[in-house]
Amino acid sequence: MSTVQHEIVPSLVGGEWRTIDSVRSGEVFNPSTGAVLARVPFMSDEETSAVVEAAAAALPAWSATPAVERARILFQFRHLVAEHFDELAAIVTREHGKTLPESRAEVQRGLEMIEFACGAPSMLMGDTLPNIAAEVDAETVRHPVGVCVGITPYNFPFMVPLWMFPVALACGNTFVLKPSEKVPLSAVRLGELLTEAGLPPGVFNIAHGDRECVETLLAHPQVAAISFVGSTAIAKAIYETGTRHGKRVQAAGGAKNHLIIMPDADLDQSVKALAASAYGCAGQRCMAGSVAVAVGAVADPLVEQLCDHAGSLKVGPTDGAEGVDMGPVIRREHRERVASYVGIATDEGATVALDGRRDFPGDGFLIGPSVLDRVSPQMRVGHEEIFGPVLSVVRAADLDEALAVGRNCPYGNGASIFTRDGYAARQFKQHFNAGMIGVNVGVPAPMAWFPFTGWNQSFFGDLHIQGTESVHFYTRQKMTLTRWFASSDDSHHDPVWKTK
Image (cartoon, rainbow, N blue to C red):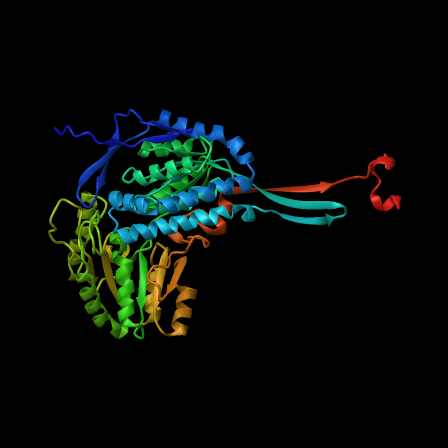
């Protein structure tokens, strides 16, 4: 039995860092080496409830804090994140396995969400209409919803929490973050920097745990709103459970993103964009390109160039390594799951044009990029979310057939077209069944100022993450009608114009 002692990941409760003494826990791995970095204890129902109660206790004072003062703390937080930029990127690489450039890009996107939240005083302004009826004035104002919860996935341990809590805090809510137990270290560092920025105790809290912790958060009567990012099955369950308990819920789920390549596309640029989309972050992102739909005669040269380009990518450990194009996946069992889809493709009649299943030195969770050709949408590799570096190629005769592939997909997250033809691009924009569209863009993920608008089984709820929709999600409107009557004490209350 190993006697190695690992770091125990603390929780943040009411401004106090606590080490939970739990019999249940998970291991945090370095995916590049397979080594255990830390142990994260899982909170019980009672311990999770205590975190919510700490957030509820801090709510009255924080919601009464002027919006400008809340924004000033976020400005300081933004300064600290920028100051620790390289350190934060290194943490992401260490616990997730992204290449360092990918981790830096993640931190940058998180910074942009903080910058967006700093503008909350402008976005929180209400509307007024004097004299909407005779001597009646109308106004609306935005109020915080209360204690908010964020349940975040492993694939973006830094960025996705920042999709949620900066806006929630700027709007006057308190927050409980439940990060993925696979990647809790980035969340802990965010909590430390928020504390250093001057955030009052209890306004931001971190709860670690598994299903028991999540179920407590979904049902707790003092929780008002829940934000979630993860797989479709869990997103649907989170939405149904949260709304059944009267919560406001936004739940972003999985995806099967399509990339259409028209015969007139710039093939060299398209291949580079497809490879970056499919194999960036080892394919572990909900905006990853998963299905390349090759239209007409472009199919054969596209597959050939894809195999050449993907086959030349350097796959290896990212922790301290230079020149690596693609890092590991998150866990050993996930690597085996992704690899199994290459075998499934063969069994279903697809052609394995590039096989990423090969031996790599060391104990990291490495798998190479794969290209599967002559896939049909009915195959498992054609419609199931793989969440790894596997790109399936579906061949279509024309644009209408390519559009039909998306129309029959249960997801609706993102899709892109590569073409020089404005008409084809317009038809794609108008008719493809997805909420985020790219034209000659491999990953049509919106920046902070625009909402992350997944459709169908890719999103459950109404108001999306990011952009002004996030401000609306974390606030509720109050409308006031006002009528004032003249006082009978004319000497005291006569308007100025009457005395002249």
